[in-house]
Length: 479
Figure 1: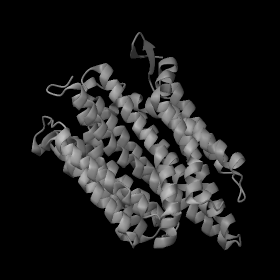
Figure 2: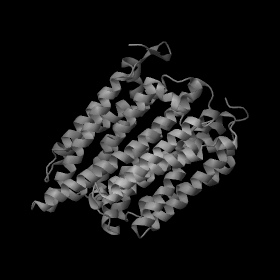
Figure 3: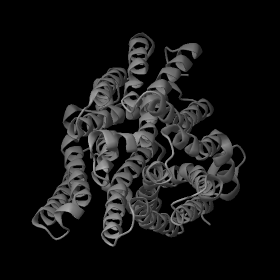
Figure 4: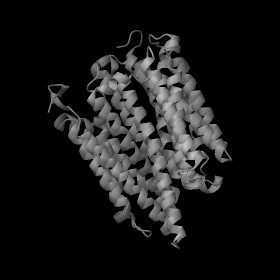
């Protein structure tokens, strides 16, 4: 038990952290259902619409690790309150947005606040629950909130957009944020790590985030600007230069944001590669299938939310223990490969969905396969990322792979949204109707997403170790 905190206060504090995390998780899924409505209201193009998601993913992923370091220096409760405040204010700005750039800027600020809340919540939980069994229970609750939040998000997004309008998918955060802030002032304990101000790797976070924002901007605008234009080539060159600067900063920093030595460990390197490729496929699934359901099949936002619900419920069920059972029985490598192949097959099925598709035949099987694949593979990927590192660095390794998920999602979504837009444009130019052209564009992107998932499965086959159950512990053994 954490010193100075009794049992009841610890679990109430965990409840507050879960509420804050739920608000962050909701925002990663609730927006997908409202995308077509946002597109129509604010005049987004098909490819620029990806920025509503990517602006959030980039700042979230770019500052996730730095958020934890800031908590070490300034205190976790103080940073949690700051993150909740920033996220809530940004949610208000999103909800009141009447232009594309206001919404995109507010989404970027949301991502920054969300990164701080997520990183500090994990640190506070690790400090409050020091006994292995209790820590496992607490992390299990966090996992359920993350998966369950996805289920709530897609359904709530459909209801709010259908009954009210898309603005409310952001405004719903206000009462949650105000309540969590008010209670956290008095009920959250204050911890602080051991880190000096000079070791905060702000330059590293800024350079890698700027690099990724430039490459995503170049890809998203590649169709309109031209792939060999001075703008596209210049942005890509600047992105590469900033990435090189980031690597130089990390190699010379006393306490780097991302210790490059960790990538000399095979499982860490492979797990992060898997995370990038898989996230590219999975974020494209959420983004593109929501557009297919609304713009091609003509579903209402509520119907879209209900269509996603089976997949999210499956993911929630695996987070409650099914995933751990798979790992204890089969190790980490087999579940990851199986889950990724199921996801790839689900995306392949989506790539043949017709213009007049039927839910039971053309949508539900894909949703079930994708939910099953994600549920099986997610936790083993995290375990793989931490299996080669020392226990003291497990939190850092987990943070790095989560950052890879966010960055992979942003890059993959930019690539696949641009591919869909280019394919749609070519089909329209050939004389095909609007719905058929949109559907053809989505087919191309789903095929590419399936390829990303399959490549991730191939990469996972190179993992050097498996995890198997021995007694009451999970031990790592050579295959």
